[in-house]
Image: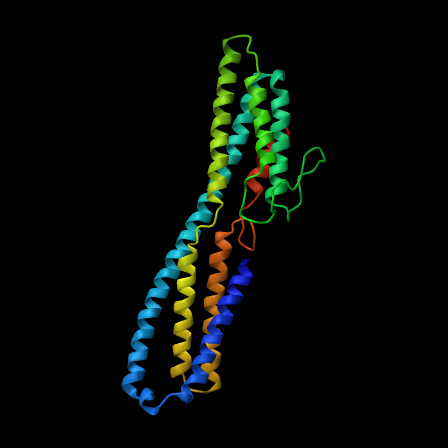
Length: 267
């Protein structure tokens, strides 16, 4: 579900819970409206609020840590591309084919990972290679095949002396590091939000707002306050889901490190 869809769903559920409480309250017998009963409800609400705040805080921290991790790893990945290209450049003209494919891969990765941003200049690379552009999934068979071509070109190098042999070995080592970093990014891009946790949190919030409807005075100020509370929680859910989908929404991983790497590769 999208960030806005998740936030709207939570907002509507909280308002529905409040409405159910408001509608049920007049139907309750008078003994259920006694001061002791209201105090008990308030104690239970306080317990649920504590649990909900704890779970929401843990989920937000997890999503933020995951977002920061993949952002930092993308910077590392971009630097790995530059280091590999530098090794190939130092090797000499025999490595130009591998460098050309590496540039094609980098441009295609940028255009496919950030399809809503301007694509890198040029028409000599494939675009939109991901199965479902705009999602958190990064794996692409076509992009993997391009990297496979780079690996084959590196392995096909025929060093003529010890210097070129060392550079070829270094390039192959750099490629292995790049390949490992790519798969790490692919795995990190998956959602870190536990669906059972999210469903449980939403259920607790529903119960809390239902209780609000049971004990809140029936006036406009109380209803506006509850609505603003529901809106605040829905906005927190929006931020939480947005952090968990690092390539979509208003909070997204920057493509600038990869674009900087591509500019370096084009030199």
